[in-house]
Image (tube, each protein chain N blue to C red):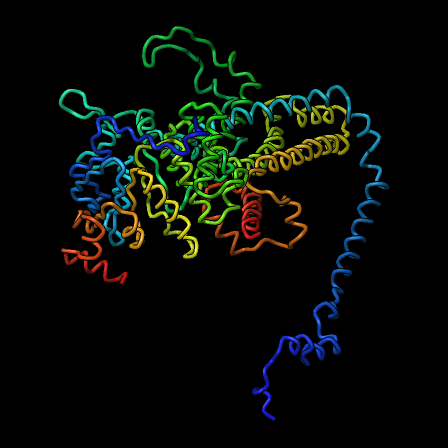
Amino acid sequence: MTQTSPIQHETDAAAGGPVLVAENVRKSFGDVEVLSGINLEVQQGETVVVLGPSGSGKSTFLRCINLLEDLNGGRILVDGRDVGFEVRGERLHELSGNQIAMRRRDIGMVFQQFNLFAHMTVLQNIIEAPTGVKGEPREQAVAYAKSLLAKVNLSGREDAYPRQLSGGQQQRVAIARALAMRPKLMLFDEPTSALDPELVGEVLATMKELSGEGLTMVVVTHEISFAREAADRVVFMDGGVIVEQGTPEQVIDNPQQERTRAFLSRFL
Amino acid sequence: MPVTSRPVTSADATRGGERVTARSLSLDVANSVRRKHPWRIVAVLVIAVLLAQLVQLLVTNERFGWPTVAKYLFSIQVMQGLGMTIVLTIIGMILGIVLGVVLAICRISKNPVLQATSSAYIWFFRGTPLLVQLIFFYNLSALVPQLSLGIPFGPAFVSVATNTVITPMLVAILGLGLHEAAYMAEIIRGGLLSVDPGQREAGASVGMSNARIMRRIVLPQAMRFIIPPTGNQVISMAKATSLVSVIAMSDLFYTVQAIYNRNFETIPLLLVAVIWYLIITSLLNIGQSFIEKRFSRSAKQENNSLWSFLTRRSGRRPVAAAGAAGSVPASVTEASNTEASNTEASVTERSDA
C-alpha cells in the first residue's frame, strides 16, 4: 500500500466539516492574558498562515490546539471533537492524559527547535510513534518512513543521528516524523525561525509541496513570501485577537487595519 | 616604478617573494624551537625520591606484617566479611535506586504534598550522618517497643516486639538504603531535568502517553546524566558499609577488627581491609566506565571517554563546562560534582567536534 500510493494525509474528514474550529479561545499566563477570544475555522485541505508580531499570542494559540497549553476558556475542536474534553450531558468533562494522547495522534506538530529525539536515528524518530503508539507493523512503518524521507529529500539519511544533520535537514525530518502519524491537521510553529537564512528555503519548499497536496495546515511564521505563495488564507493576530483575515492578496497587499499595515511595513 | 599598476597573476602569488623569504629564514611554526620545561624534570625527580622511600618503607618495615596479611587475606572469616560487605552494597544500592526513583518523581510531580514530602525526606536523610541514623535505627526499640500492623489509630491485627524484627541486618539495609535513596533522588531528578522539555513536547505531539514519553524519550536521555554520579554512589556505598561495624554487623571491617582485637595484629589486618576495599572499588570503577561508554554510545560516535579527555587536554575548559552545568540542577550531590562536570566537559567538547 505504501509502495504504490506515495503519501496519504487522511483526507477523509468525518462529516466534511471543518478540521479545526476554535471558539472564543482565551488563555492567560498568570495575570497576562495572551489570547482574548480567538475564533477560527480551518477547512479540509486549507493552508492557513498566521502572521503577527512577537507576543501576539500566535504560538500560544497553536500550542493550545494540541493542548500543549491548557486553555482558560472557549473551545477547540479538531475533526469535530474537543481535544482535551468529552461532552457528557450539558458539560465538558476533562479527559485523562492517555485519552488526550489518543486525540493528539491526529494532530501533527513541527516545532521551532525541531525537537527530534536526540538519542534516536532519523528512521527511529519517524517510526517510533507509528509502531509504538499506533501499533503499526514495523516493516510497514519503515516503508512509509522511507517514502516520507524521499518526499522531504532525505533518502539515505535513515541512520544518521539528529546532531549530524543541518538545521534544515533536522526540520525536514521533524516534518516527516509528524506526517508518519498520518495527521488530519498539521501545525507548524515558526518552523524556519531557528534556521540559518540559507537553510530556510529547503524547509519552505517542502511545506509548499505539502500544502499543494491538500494537507490541512496551520502555519505560524514570519515568512511573508511563504504566506503569499502557499496560503489559502492569511490570519493576522495582534494583542491576543485576530485583527484581520482573508486571502494573501487581501491581507498582505491590501490590509484594511492600521495594525496590520504597521506590521507588514516592516517587511517591505 | 609603480608596482600596483602591474596585474598580479596566480603565478606571481606562488612564486611570490614573501613566501620564498619565509622559507629561507625558517620562519615556520613547524621549525620553531620548542620551549624547555625544566620544572617538569624537577617534579619527576622529587616524586621518584618519595616513591623510592615509600617502597623502602613497605619492604624494610617489619611492622607491616606482610606474612600476617597474606595469612588472613583469603581466610574464611575475612571472606565471609567481604561477602557481607558486597551483599550490603548491592541491597543498599537497589533499595536506594528504587526509592530514589519514587522520590525523584514525587519531587517533580505537580502535587505539592508529594513534592513537600519528598523534599522533607531528602532534607532529613541527607541532613543527618549515616552513622547516627544507623545507631538510631539500631535503638529503635527504645523509642517504639512494639511494632503493629493494623488500621491507623485503630486496632492492630499483628503486633510484635521491635527487637525481634529489627535485626542488625535489617538496620544495616534500611540505614544504608534509606540514606542512599535521598542522594539517588537528587541524582535522578537532576538527570530528568537535564532533558530538554522540547523532547517531552515532541513525544506528546505524536500522541505518546506520559508513561511512554518517560520510558522511551526522557529516561534514555537522562541516563547519560544519571549513570556517572550513580557509579560514584556505588563506590561510596561500598565504603560506607564499613559503618555498620558499629552495630555489630560482621562486614569486612567488623571482621578484621574482631580478629585484631584477639591477636593484636592491628596494622596487618587493617591492611587486609584496605586491600579488599581497593579491589572492590577498582572493579567498580572499571564497571562504571564500561557502562558509561555503553549508555553514551547513541549520543556520540567518536571515542570520547573521560580517559581520552584527561589525557588529551590538561584541565577542563571552565567557560564551556559552566554553560553546560547550567542545565543540571546544582543540588546534585557534592560527591558527584567532579565526575558530573568532567562528563559535561566532555559533552561540550563533543558538540564542538
